[in-house]
Amino acid sequence: MKKLFTIFCLLITWVSLSQEKLNQLDLNKRRTGKWLIYLDKDWKRTDDSANAQYCRYTWYHDGMNIYPMGPCGKEGYKLETPANSGSSKLLNGEYKWLDEKGKLSSVHVFKNGVYISCKEYFPGGKDVEQYFDFTEKCQGSKHGWKVTIYKKNGDVKMISPTCPDASGKWPLTRD
Image (tube, rainbow, N blue to C red; front, side, top):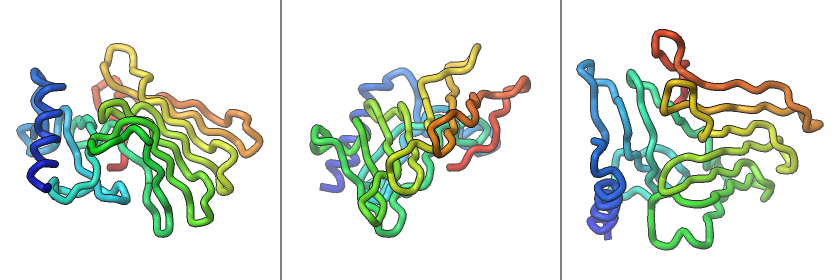
């Protein structure tokens, strides 16, 4: 079964990205370009592809993850997976994290392993606190995203695009 999962992820990678190399390091041995990363049941990163529960794509620039995931799978949290996720480990669809009281904590949307969006909720699970739109690209770049931060009453507190600066450097992002 472990070999089957590894073969499955490699096959998906090969079919969907036949021209783009994955998991490359630059001359300084920093991650660069498109990467297939593996996640455990709590969506914590693992290098053990055989025991991974999920996998997804992300992009790196100068060793920094351009599309990081926020904290998921906290102690006592439960993951609701899409009904159509089937046996594929590649994230695809809408994934909901519920807190220890069963209230909505976050909703993550993926399409064929690519991060589309994330909503993080205020405690209680009713009101959106932050919305990350990973389909928003920066002018002149094939990457980028936008975060909208809300007040508890639903009013927009701040909208901020995340793009590289004039020198091509990305802001510090968590991995």
